[in-house]
Image 1 (cartoon, one colour):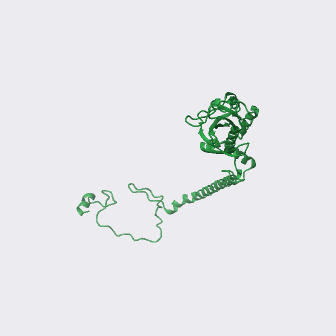
Image 2: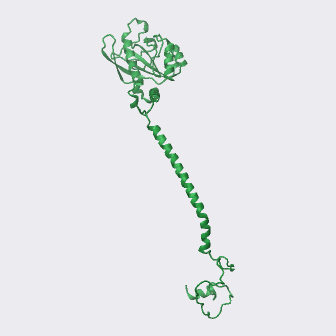
Image 3: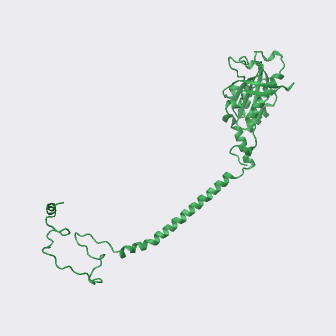
Length: 306
């Protein structure tokens, strides 16, 4: 900045003094500092304010007084906060220990049994249709104990009791809590014998047992309705062709029921003996029951710790 600028801006005034402050001429001798304090001096904190001059800051002695008064409060607050945090951590730690013990403790016998029943009851929903109704099922004949193989024809969509069962059976099972019916049709190796196997899902194992008890346990002339697919070897296996019917049987929450007959269209009055039909149907049904209800050691099942 040039001298010309300084003279224009300040108009010849000395910084720090107002206009007409009475200053002129050379400055007088500068007073020399004396040791000690002037008894006539007024403490800075008590000095009267000069107009236009900012008030001086408080001395260190006066500024420290309120800090000394607040220090015990801050200390007490810090101690209280520390105690609260410690108590909170202790509570969380105690809860965490309790949760850890609960999650790792050994299950009781009642808990294991309940877990097994819940796992079995949900298999019909969790397992794929091809797992419940496999492509091939092995069985044996009752007369010669010869090994035989049944082949899957088709799997029906899940249906209600009224649609999948004859009215008397449907009425009985609905009264005890029928949920849905799973069906599939199998044929023997020759393709002349067919069976429709039905798995009735009940609301509970108790409901399934009560329904079976109420049925009397004897085979009837009604039961599960057949399921056949056009264009297959079993396309002529319909309800009129049913010859062998199973009694209702329960395993867990499932009621098993089957109907067997011939694929050539002959009806039940043909007079042909039925043991081969029963062998096929009962062999298929036994395998399906095993898939849905058999389990190994409960302690080796998922989410069960013994």
